[in-house]
Image 1 (cartoon, helix red, strand yellow):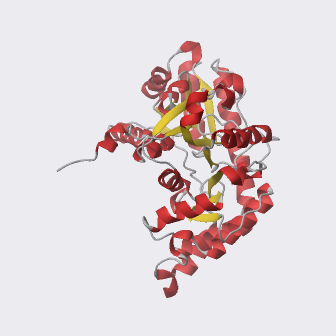
Image 2: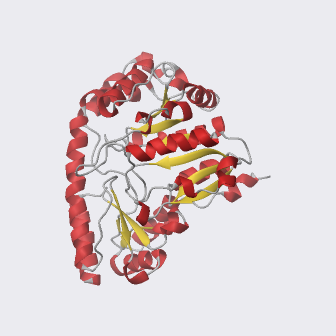
Image 3: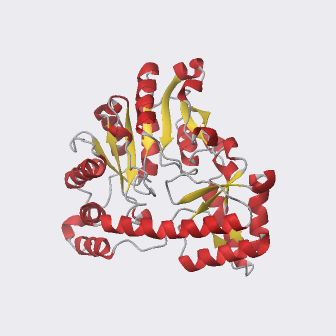
Length: 388
């Protein structure tokens, strides 16, 4: 029996390793609080669940999904309306929108649709680990582009060596950014479009945190930049704004040729999203923006608690204004993994080491705000007691 060589290139998935560590500790009777995984604990809006239940009872919805892999036209139309309303972006639901089983699936389909084996694909470092896995599974080579505090965690495109830019055929970006929380600007997206056109690079902008922004931070879509649809696509999801992570419903939008290519991959991979989930998603897009506002208020409150606690133990910094994560510098030059282990050993609080997201994640940990208020308060009390 043979196992494919390509799997040997894939590092262990961060969150699977964390789950193993958490489960072992729990089996030993330790009260573990995990602030490592970005999975909202609040329920999906009741009316969305009710819409799913209603539609799931209809026999006609028990067959293959309508429009199969592309997604229901009604869903794609509602996605287009949502993008117009929230971001001022116009897309044609017929040819410029594709339903996805979550935006993570879109990363794989983008690579298989647009990238050839041995191609070079740019990705930020630190960056969401799934981008690297998608690139490697497609037989391509990732090239790390550093994103640093001094540059507001935005890549300096002009610093990418010309010989690398000429070789590259694709680029993965993610703003608001996981793990740093950084937000892009209109000027940056305009520069990205110019860079992509200059070097004939296809852009995959992953934007599932588009609605999770604080203070006066503007919600932005890459597709709002002039010429963006000439060079790429954007991925998005209902997971974060509507607490629907487990529902696995998302979308790709943008360049019609890329959407068609990704659709071709999908039609040879799966048969689309269960109709009732798409119909419930339509309801969410139409009626549940209030849920997003409520969640932002909750995350803001939790964010302030964590920042106050960290300040009390000597970790004082100005966080970026996006996502429900905090990208926290470790104290006194302690390595990311050492500080992560110390937190776990001393307080049974789990956080993600910055190096799990790349070499430039050294010196940071990532704390997620997607935990109940009482458990977050308990975690902060433990940390304050141990480190103050």
